[in-house]
Length: 509
Image 1 (tube, rainbow, N blue to C red):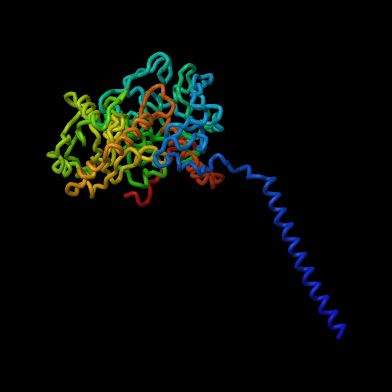
Image 2 (cartoon, helix red, strand yellow):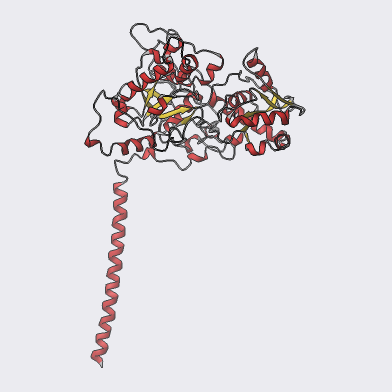
């Protein structure tokens, strides 16, 4: 009996010992992994700068522009201007002087950890017929580019200006190489394409369409079509294009009818557009491409001291009333609003001092209608922003510039088309917005208006810099696509000089 009891005791002790040993080994195993992870850190082939910052999506906190600090947002690529005015309360309210580098570019402040990182852009030296030659500039001294220190070629005025985005971006890249020209520094031109984040194609496609899209009697095709064909042949034969399949290239096609031929051949590239109204989603979409603002045509409202009571017109619209496609609402709204008091809804154009009259009208109005026309967007929205006239947007398919970092609901009113055309819905909605709410939105307009200003030289936070920053935010996705494209590169690439045919998506038609 004692022997049986002794054997049972030994079994219990043995099980306890095994359990303790197992617990000890497990603890040591977990501890060793913890120490190894701490010592090794992240894998060297992972670029942590590309990882999204958790606060990136909170750059506007309920419309309170003083609720965040620029240090809270760490963009994934380069030195990026904040999407709303910077809170300087933490530094005693004193504005720090802007430092400049050897080229005269404005350098970011020393507290910015990404100070030396900018978007690196390689720009093709296309013949002048593709860019400044379209502005009647003549090359001198064998260079395809104008000497911006001597004279800056002018862009045609009038409505041509609204789609002049390619002009301003090209000028900014050229200026980045010239000492003494003070400019903001979101992007710089590099001469080695292997160092570049993106490849820029400097074709002034909008002015090419506006000026040369018609076929003259002695021509078989328009000059614009010929330029597009030559552009496709040149770009797709370059080693830069073949290296990435065009996925890191930037193509400018801000006029909705520009690049009608080339877009079908260069669709893998990033497009900079006004909207997607005349594009299949397989050719252009918000995930791949960048929406840029129009350049406003009316005069900016400088030194605006107006208020709710000093703007006598409640609601303003002046433009083409009878439009096709999504613009049918203009006609219905015209008949619904034309007899309302303090509402201006009339046909208008740039002819007969139309721009000056529109400036006066918007500057004296509380709300300005932006209704879809032939395409989802129009310049009228950006005219309204420049006028500090609260935009009322009626365009279900509109895409807006920088909307990933800018909350338009803080300074715009959005109305579904189906609601806007309901009897009395729109006018009752506008009249329900009282003085305090309007004043808050009016103040926001004055805070964001600089994001839509095009100028040369560009300045921190203007439209040129905001577009470059929007491009930079696409760079991680571009790198992903390029790396995937290169998976099977060991099996060979197309021969140099051979025009590589890029098939359209299978479901494009």
